[in-house]
Amino acid sequence: MCQKTFVTFVVKQNTKLILKMSFHKLYFLFVFFVGAKAFGQTKPNATPYTNEATYEKLKKKYPFITPLNRPVPSNIIIDKDVEYANINGLSLKADIYYPKDQSKKHPGIALVHGGGWISGSKENEKYMAQELASKGYVAIAVGYRLSEVAKYPAAIDDVNNAIKFLKKNKKKYSLNTKKMAILGESAGAQIATLVGVKAKNKIQAIVNVDGIVSFIHPEAEESTYAAYWLDGDRNVNLKNWTEASPLEFVCKNTPPTLFINSSQPRFHAGRDDMMKILKSHNIFTEYHEIKDTPHSFWSAEPWFTETFNLTVDFLDKTLK
Image 1 (cartoon, rainbow, N blue to C red):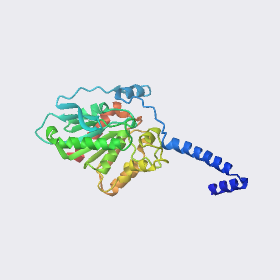
Image 2 (tube, rainbow, N blue to C red; image 1 turned 120 degrees about the vertical axis):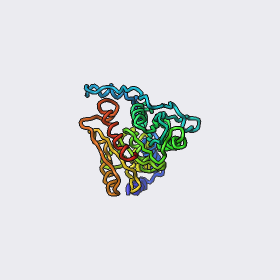
Image 3 (cartoon, one colour; image 1 turned 180 degrees about the horizontal axis):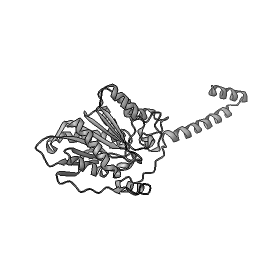
Image 4 (spheres, rainbow, N blue to C red; image 1 turned 120 degrees about the horizontal axis):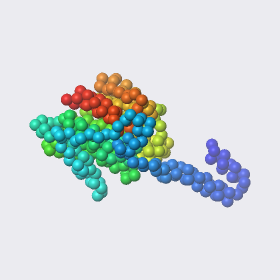
């Protein structure tokens, strides 16, 4: 309708030059506004995302918290910086924590750090990994390509490749490949849940620590971090926003899922709907909301211990 009205206006002017100039002006404005959205995605601020930095940030409002500082358990072995894949010369590495006891096979778990898809590292999973290993789990803390290096779905591919690598080396780590879980926090929880529900590696349990499970749910906010990772705003690249939403793939084959949440509702987007679907298929699921907590609560005590205990209880129920 607008285009037709515009052409009628130009014809009345009886000048080809006006038509040509007006068209080019409109085309320029179209490219400027749409192109800025599609091709000039604003890069968000990539602030350091570590346990230490998070503690320093949170202690101002929560003066009772203490930093994470746990000794390495004596009953585990740690293999640091293990290359699990090489993408065009880029070495992708993981840290693998596993029990010294090799007399039996152990269940495994992949750990995926958070950081808005743009920051963070496998070091963030140090304490969770070593404590899980001390309880009889083979834990792989995955370093994956962040959004400054590669957009979606690179991180998903990386986590899948890390799990494949661990399974290929099952003898070294005394891994039971039929009992594999995945855990992630924040952005890492979204990645972990997506990997888990799509089940390329036959995951048997998912632990989602304060991560959304849908980018397109009515409860979901449109963040610049998600837009940068997904290569465009939601209205520009809806395909990626939909494909990256774990809720879209929940079905009768989805593994048991644990949600551990802060008291910040925006990080629960899609959780309740996912739980309803799981329950409709008689799949075990539960959630625990830790009272009066900020996002990234797991990066400090006493919340880390509570998160760890809930995780172990769930994993022991589903994998042992």
